[in-house]
Length: 553
Image (cartoon, rainbow, N blue to C red):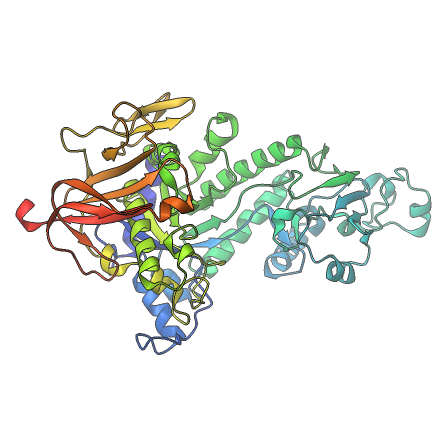
């Protein structure tokens, strides 16, 4: 992983040759920017293009596409991709793959997985628009709550021409497979986690298909001046969440039953192996993967090879204002990934904060942004972490705010969610706790250990250097309530919470006065500051970013 980290840093330096890191104490990232709109409520921007240019100047990394080759080339841009999926609708990728397969003597249909027998899939919890799907693909059939995909078995194609004649159909050696053409039997995902998007599964068991896919990504990423790719969700793949099989389900290329743990694990191993090949052959391409739905420990058989291939982990909703002490004390895996040399985008969501209780209150929204940044700085490892706040939006993009995701509609979301004035304050690097303060302990069964240590059980971890400014009780390692803190060379971040997350009653808790280990000034959302102080008052689920007062430096 050391080589991976060096490559990542070198690419960031090259992409930022004309400009240094945007903010002094951490990296910043945008996820899937796009959909820029002309603001309706500010004179700060006069066009959608002005918003895009502002975003370009305020991130070190994007997981997406600026929709401009020039801007992509001047950035570190990782394009979203799903090697495991192919769209149900013919697109540029499928046309390219089909052409290349034909030119190389391959059957274009070989890039897909296929059901080997007629397969009924449940539609009870599906978001798939089955009516429009049936119109586009008339060989599919449905009942009130199931969808039938015909199976394809090559033994029925006696003349090996890729289709069944009337005679072949009547004399099928496998009567359980009724597809006339192989394309009718493609493995189609219908489960609730599909989000209404129709996709087929890619055949990663064929080395020739893998080679085609690698060449596609080489071509596509070069065409858009990208530095690599980002997979928004790795799993589920062939399990019951995406393939709720009622009957049938045998997959031709895997000889396994869809909708089972065995098929899920076999395909995951193939996908991880493919990502390794992709990275090796497109070196120094960067690979980012969302950690959502993945168990990165303790299953070392799959997770260790995966971790060795991923340069950047994306952690959706990793931080929320009311996340509570319990979740913080269980979040050791971020520091373990960092110890292995991995980089991370830590995403802040404000869905459970004070703005949830007071959606029209300007200060409530700004306080949630401040708390989110304070929590982010608890996890920040300069040079390895990137900040992104997606607020309370239903989508991650560059559109304007609405009344549900900010106190004022018509403003660029990324502009209001990224606290520029706070991020500009140089806190330096994290440092060890001041003398006399008790350390916070990791509490993630069966693991328990000091957060300032570099080992947790059998795992190496980057030291977090967390300590308690206040806690209920003197001896417990999991206080019912506490104020957790982390010191920086030029600052301090802290957060008051109870163990449980999302307690509405605690959101309304009265402010508590907390003594500070020195003299500090508080940095607010708009960059204004408090007077120098030796104590601070914090409400429930409230965090703060502090800078050393000049008299204390």
